[in-house]
Length: 402
Ligand SMILES: Cc1ncc(COP(=O)(O)O)c(C=O)c1O
Image 1 (cartoon, helix red, strand yellow):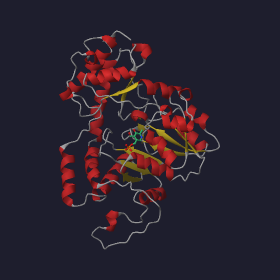
Image 2 (cartoon, rainbow, N blue to C red; image 1 turned 90 degrees about the vertical axis):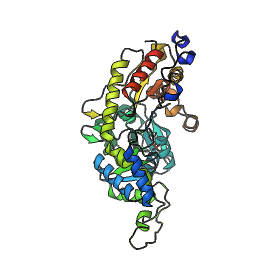
Image 3 (cartoon, rainbow, N blue to C red; image 1 turned 60 degrees about the horizontal axis):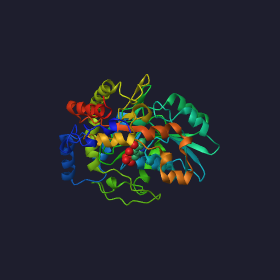
Image 4 (spheres, rainbow, N blue to C red; image 1 turned 60 degrees about the vertical axis):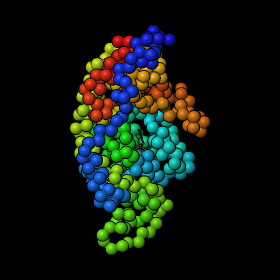
């Protein structure tokens, strides 16, 4: 155990914390303003709280923001991922490549759509799926790729898109972290058949739970709209609107994946502030880069030229060889200092279900496994004040003995 782990001034060892219980910094606190509250109340007063006019407005504004041809608001990014892989019509044994450094929903979507997930390791510096590793994993059964723009950094699309074309694969982008992400002037979500976005509470645009599916394919967009609401030919909003009553017909066995207007009420105002919030997170990001340089840990890689990072997660790698401290001890020590942190992610191959079902081993994905064992995400919500950021830096410096 290093000397730091025994240091009595640390809150984990009984010392005074940087932040007490009452002003604990919650990881991923949403930045909700009066506009959101007013819009939710107006939605409740309107009598239309299900999928309706606000959902349609949110779809239209999101479509404009991303530059996509179609946008479909859903109750999660998980739903968007499921529908997009399902739309590809996989047969048993069909393989879909994805990254091990992701949330389980990415991999589960492939399984629920009847495919076999195949992992390709990540680039050790960026955490994004490695084009070389994708090439190595392509087999005659490979049908597609689900790429995740990890932490908000765009994947290497100049190398990924040609691989996808060469092998005739479909491409789906998991843009859960990547609302503001751009690669060579194109917004994330527009490189493949579908882009899937999340509005979960910690995300860059928040609706509580919520997601958006974007696509340039009109037929698939229409199919997804039907599948997202039980497979009914007419959506409930149109059915019960002021026009004359319409019967619905079920034309597919669909799902219950639609977004409600209460969620869209939040989303409309969150989206209106997406750039302002990005600027604040960018400021915090740069401050961390300056203030944490020199500590025995690994900071995020610099941005690639002509790209825009969405600044969704600021990740530190806690390498025991550098600092003598284990990641899990640092998580506990920071929490004791009153600073909430996250772990994004334990590599998919380390979770028991996947290990047991697919036989995936740590050595097959050494970079993702290493990142998964050493990574910590520190708070970067736009709601943080300069004083909060100062305390977060102070807490990290304290824990690392600086
Ligand atoms: C990379 C990634 N994909 C998918 C999801 C699923 O998003 P949702 O919670 O909106 O279903 C998340 C959410 O944490 C995520 O981070």
